[in-house]
Amino acid sequence: MSEQKIDKGVEASLKSLDTEEFIDIHFYRPIGYRWALFFQKLGVSPNAITFAGIFLGIAAGIMFYFPDLKLNILGMLLLVWANSYDSADGQLARLTGQKTELGRMLDGLSGDVWFISIYFCLCMRLTSDYSYGIWILAAVTGYFHSKQAAMADYYRNIHLYFFKGKSGSEFDRSAQQYEQFRDLSWKGNLWRKLFLYSYGSYTASQEQFSPKFQRFFVAVEKRYGDNIPQSLRESFRAMSKPLMKYTNILSFNTRVIALFISLLLNLPWLYFVFEITVLNGLLVYMVLRHESLSSVLYDRIKSDDRI
Image 1: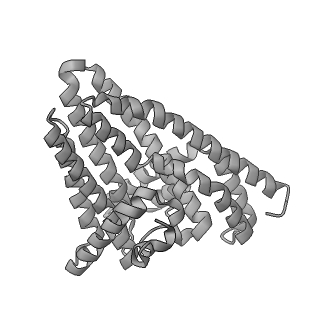
Image 2: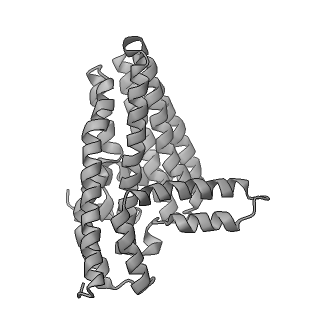
Image 3: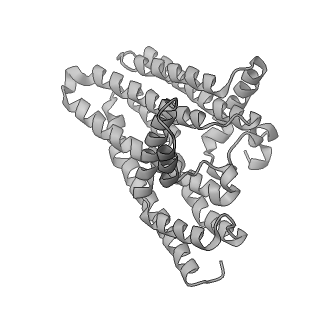
């Protein structure tokens, strides 16, 4: 199916075709769009959809606790349902202009809650066979999972920033989050303060993994401010777009396919091994490629070449 055959309503609800995965474009986004229209008629907010998806994801994890294929398949269906809601909340927010920081935080939190539930229930299922070793394996996997997801999200938002501008992305800087945190009084702003600090820490960890991009972006800000030349935007997009397939592999669909295969084989521990080996290798490759393109563009700016 070509991009031209994508429903215009669905396309309008997407962030960008540059950053969307094939399965998302042709499965989750069309389903999510219809959920979004349905919930819009009911007056349901995007955040309410996110909460519903969180409970569906938790229920899916519980189904994976049981060494029963039928219940595992039910869990798979619940997880697919949860992810369709994860599509719907963002699509509804973009269609109705209801994008908020809280919504972004909840959207990121929902996937974490799903996988915490899945990891915990898989460990409970496997403890009798592997004792505490499976918990250690899951903890290590969870740590790297968080890094994979964080960097994939970061590179997508960087791409969108250069492609569509600040309003078309969710690219943030930790310094700005920390500054808002310091300027805001604790009185009456407890949750806002906690959000700014935690989000600032999350963004800072992304920045630590991308030092050459940080150097490049500082140079861009100093020279152009918010008026980045279109030629530079186009150059960055052209170099970054081939890397978007790696950000998508490190997102939901690939890891869930691996999870489902491991469950169908009744070897759930294989999923943890897949994350630690295959996806971590891809993470390293993706970071190195992105750092390389950042160095190339930084050198062009510093040498005052035409971009």
